[in-house]
Length: 103
Image (tube, rainbow, N blue to C red):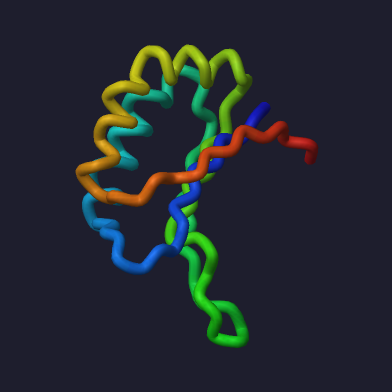
């Protein structure tokens, strides 16, 4: 299993429409990829640290896939539509990391 992390940095002067993201984009991701090997999707919102410092990431989406191959097929099939939707909710360039689940 792998996890694809999509991290939107905290960046002043940028836009992020959280309502659109949660009500339109995330359901679209689930609809397109659930039958293609997407096992789980969690969305996390960064909150200030104990000292009041800002979280480094505004929003993080953690997508668990059955395999890297499944993610590759899903990205090929629906990537243009899903990645093309990003400008509808943000002008932030997300950081994407693919990780192997160890435990």
